[in-house]
Image 1 (cartoon, rainbow, N blue to C red):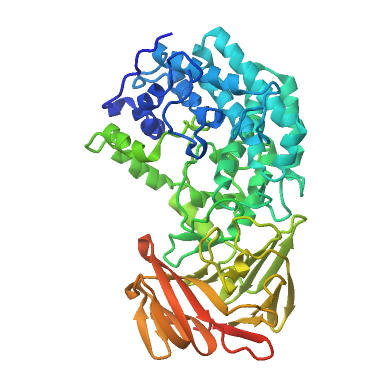
Image 2: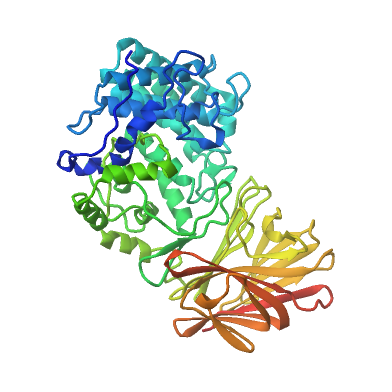
Length: 614
């Protein structure tokens, strides 16, 4: 073995690179730093990554997820290109072998791979085992042809053991019902390993698992999302899931994978809110049960996605266009357009040293493993295609409807459309990162007016003392009536109940507080633009001019003026004390939390009204 340092790269010859390789620049520029962090000195830590570059949450020598950059070592060792100075470099191979052997030695006898403790103590080990075998198989794919025979044989053996553990053990299946994405890595990786090693038995295990993808109540909900912490991860973590569905489809060409994508696309669209600039789409994620909600849609990698956005595997011809109503098309909104990619590729030849820029970023960004889908083709729809999907979102151009759905895990969701507005609610019986209650309020032509967040972010809720309904668990009822729809929630622990009456031009919020044991107030997370104007009973204030310390009020009404017209008026019923606390985001958005005391309580009831008649 050669333990001499892996050499740094200081510059590149840009003409050596193909456009489809541009995305590898960051990993290539910082490869030596990652490779040289492998401990080569003899001892218990030989093979461990001696610098925390990936999986910082548990940088401990029993966490095999820290080791997943063995895939990056394998990728550059096995990737032949005129610019890749690390191809078949013995210094890289020696570190790859050490890192793999360290990982193999961490594994349990049954193939389980640990994360939060040693293999004899950790449980469940679904995620590290599933993703670990996926990265092992990826290493075999990209470097198996140039690996020493003994190392390749052991890599195949250990990857297969991990795949069998995930695909057959009862504890893996039980955990996967709550965290489905963690199972998909071994399904995709298992199918890939079966292809690479001609292993029909392993392929049979993957085939046996496939029906669970569409078995309602197993991996997928009646609403169409795959379970993540027993609820929906509509946006954030779903894109980790997507990077398992893509290779699973490429390996199996099974239309059930396409149906999973279609169902999630249908679900996802309900929470996507287009802005009147015909470019921006906001994401309503307060209902997400695992990760924090980021409300800005941004473009992501699209390797391998294109094949999933044409006709299914049963089509005899390639590139069969989808029906324009097929919900899979929603994913076009999350990838860069062909025109954007063309401009990005043109900038590749701009003056400057991109290696220096990539190295400067690495201190902050670390070194994630090279993606296992990097071998697949990129996909970029035209801007015209993206625009067609945007105007086809469910909230656009619809009239009146109300939908209510639930599952057997205590999740409830309602979406309601009146000609003047669109809103949605989420409720659940489990404590997660989700915020419960109303998620957003959107108007066509005006955009999003109210947007709840999950986790510790502000949500639309009633507060009793220091507690709020946004984190209170329980189910609600929906019924038609009063010229619209009613959503009725009872919070026995807080001593209150709450009813939203959704009429065509107004929303009444009724609160019963007979058993409440603290001061009652309301919190509404407004989403303003810096050109909005806030009107109260006795004056006005530009939204952009609100102080970071807050705007104190004593008013009965708060009106939002946007682009010269009233888009929302909140009428509290009588003058009351309130405040608006603002946080300015990029691109002119202002998150403004409006908190006010509810008016005097008569016979245990209070409330307020939202007018949407402008």
